[in-house]
Image: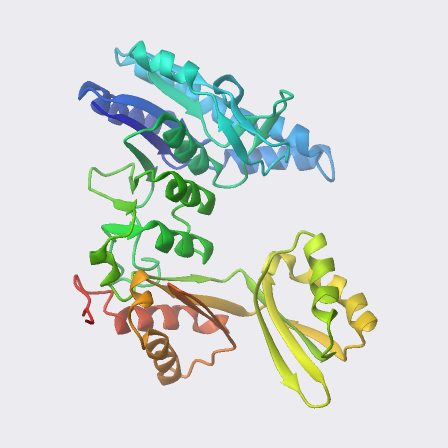
Length: 411
């Protein structure tokens, strides 16, 4: 008998009929003797609908009240699933984040989990019940409801699996697992049977939408085996696990992209101590995340500084920099929103040379100019013109033999 945590996303519980199908799947596991904890998101589109209601009431909705509002979405789905399980002849109980006591900090709309009290869940499991928990939400020590931000239900599921020392955590979605790249732009994309925590962290941070990055970080920290699979299929999905030697032999595991980037360049910046701090401190204080940064030295102790931010933060960042440019005595600031970031990821990069070179050669052969480059032990990212995104992804996918069942392995 195993203790299994399953999480079902919004598309999986998008209607009462789909919730009934989730109940059938959960009960098949329970009938095999497993203890079941199920984490649910709100119905697909419900969170956006609630945010729309909030915007109608208040120009800048109060964050505490926003959390009170958003927490109702999961309350609907968990109650309905518990009913469906009972109707099928088994027993279940639905629990909100404050009932479970998923304790978080007080950062409303993007709270972080501090601890989970497991006594109530264990009591219900020991009584033979399926425990259905609201994802995406928690409670402060003062008793205020909080939400964990977009993708927070994944984080809830992994955190529960870690706290309960579950045997596995299954993340159900509308795709059959993690793919070598986006199947919507590359027909040859293949499902990956097994991927490391580090690779999944990179893919999630670079634009892959299958798993929320915080959930992967938690899974790695507590060694929770993750199984990403489809609600609408019985097929085996993708396991996210610890690294082994076989995985290291794969040169590249996946290719991802993001069209949510913008590039900003400050020209003729005085090359002096403290200038970089003056540029990036106001941006940081505004809550803007900076990704890539490069500096090009010019004559006369001057330099150009180029960096990327999310496109949603582009205009705000440009406004901040208007004053900064004057303050530091730089020449000008300009930007470009029509860019994309394309990345290759694989733990095999640690032990094999020439992978970045291959990427650059592929881009050159297709006439794609690389504007910026960023690397880590297991990834290479390039900023390119957005119009070349799909071409770059497809050609790189072929170049690294990801469209084949086996990659050529270098010794």
